[in-house]
Image 1 (cartoon, rainbow, N blue to C red):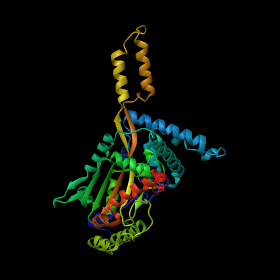
Image 2: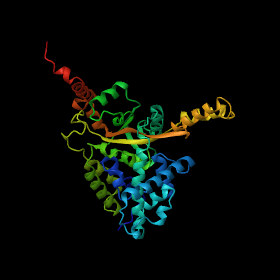
Image 3: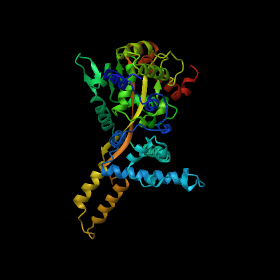
Image 4: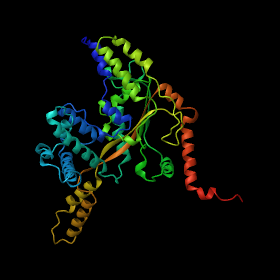
Length: 412
């Protein structure tokens, strides 16, 4: 095989994809169904966990992670491990001794056959840990302003003006030229009420698009490079994507993968000049044919995009902790026989029960990312794909639901 040139290596690296992550992010596959996880070393594992929402080197976060590991082991033992499982097939001692989730990540990424059992158990524990993390605090509300600041800031740090004056996503060799970036900073109260009225499950947890970002590339195939960029620079963590809400009406992922890998193989073998790569890619990558199947009944049949519904762990100061700390600082020194002493202690205990024992709260908050190319973006602005049509469809559905009896009244 011909040894690739430096230019060829650059092309090969630029278009190398983690296909497992791509399946989770835009093809609807659940991250807990992956057989391995792309973690290279301890630093990469640290970045992965930090992107997920926890700093494993922070004592408070580390205690929470350790407690979650203990809970995961308990759940595994109580509900999942068969009673007749041979002792030789039970979790290895090194698995049972883990108190840092980064070990699980590294072991889950292992390939040598001699570590097959350790890898299998690490993957099993990670699936349970991920599930526990997402049910933690599911009924709590997250400060919208804090969520907006944390999520939008992370994305804004990667949007630049190129030397040509146009927008770019990222810098250097990894940058992608953009036509536009649109920021959805909030959803109005009326929009939330309307959305809840026409949804089958009429609960606030089903509103996923309070915050959102639309990224519009100049070229169709660069849409996939944006998805890759989001994953590789940890703007989103793919296990935190909601697979049931993955939408891809733009690019046939299987066809795109086949084209990319075929072209990469030709460059790697020296059968193709690297400069031909993107020209052929432009010619081969085509948008999906139109489909009449609507996953959202209020969207037009012509609307196209790649849509990711993601979750970000939002950290905010806990006002109850601050209030409890101030209460004890001001009045905690009162002697036991003082009339106010028991009252102060009872108040402090009550605030603790309410959740005032930790300095911050952390809960997952959903947001949407839409990615599409410029021609598709322009087509989406007209006809039955337009937002006005979408809104009118919502209004009609809500009206039928709320005013069904009124609408059936005979005309006077």
